[in-house]
Amino acid sequence: MEECKPILNTGLRGFKVATTKISDVDGLAGKLIYRGYLIKELAGEISYEEVVYLLLYEKLPNKKELDHFKKQLAEERQLPPELILSLENRPKDALPMDILQAGAAMLAHHDPDAKELSLEAANRMAIKLIAKFPTIVAAWSRIRNNQKPIEPNPSLSHAANFLYMMNGTIPDDELTGFFDVCLVLHAEHSFNASTFAAREVASTRAHMYAAVTAGVGSLSGELHGGANTRVMEMLLEIGSVDKVEEYVTNLLDTGGIIMGLGHAVYQTDDPRAHILAPMSKTMGERTGETRWYEMTKLLEQKGKEAFKRKKGRDIYVNVDFYSAALYYYMGIPADLFTPIFAIARISGWAAHVIEEQFGGAAPKPVLYRPDSHYIGDYCGPDLCAFVPLEDR
Ligand SMILES: CC(C)(COP(=O)(O)OP(=O)(O)OC[C@H]1O[C@@H](n2cnc3c(N)ncnc32)[C@H](O)[C@@H]1OP(=O)(O)O)[C@@H](O)C(=O)NCCC(=O)NCCS
Image (tube, rainbow, N blue to C red):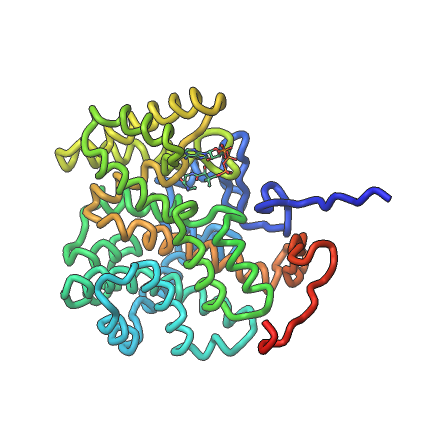
């Protein structure tokens, strides 16, 4: 009898594992939708706080709701002193994403809501995590440089407060506005690897801290959120515009990957890249160092051309390509780019954890439990005969 071949959904590409009302990515048209709104219409028009409200509560807030929500977030920015103390005792060269992941897990120890499986507790945990993630990242950026963390300033917006806690100076409106747009663009992106990781953990009814900790771990990898750091490392390694073409050709000829190009879903440019690029250009002009923007622009052109020559098909820019130089212009060190991605994405993860556990308008979810095709043919077609330790 002919053996049935298993159907493998390798990497789950294109395989729908749940329904969601939170966001959608149209990979062919290059569209990203947050709860019914096109991202390109939201970016620059609304603040990150409004986007968070939209993701968590399924509607845009009115003025009164927004003011109240901003206040709630601002009141939750402080970290437990024990967490600061713990950060002060970490090795200074610890990876920032590892610090964030550990910090997220430690927050659970100080929150009685982690012991309660209810929508109310989940909504409270969401606010606490969204408010505290930037404080952890900013505190670590200072502690590792032997500086005292800066207390959050409740009178500042989410974006301005983060830059203030990082640098100790209140950013101007243009810088705040650009950073705010970055947060808006990175807040949510459907069932990407880290969101799926968070939802998978949430599907076991583990608490939100456990779920987002998994999300942070997943985001840290260079094929996912870690790519923005690697793009900047690549730009720094290339060093100047005149070396871009040679670098790209060598990289592809030796089987290397051009970070920031390619995507598992988009078959056209990532719409977020087109919003980030002009901000990077402006920041280059503002700082008087246009090199990083110009290199990125040329890298896009030469990378796309070289990929087409090599593989006979097109490749496109993703969100991490233009965010790298932009963050660098903002004075943010390259190894903090991925934690910054996380301080935006925490809102998307939180919304997904809530949807996973409490459904809302979407159908009731179930525990994820995929199957695998076992190819462990260690003893041919038969099972292996067990041999006791003394006879091996
Ligand atoms: C994101 C990514 C993992 C998607 O991978 P994927 O779904 O397997 O990509 P595709 O199916 O379109 O393409 C696979 C082929 O293109 C190559 N490829 C994809 N992206 C590439 C890149 N940025 N540079 C060079 N080659 C690339 C792969 O090596 C593979 O080659 P092969 O068929 O010879 O094995 C991949 O594009 C990548 O590694 N990009 C760089 C990292 C990055 O920017 N990640 C952030 C994503 S938002």
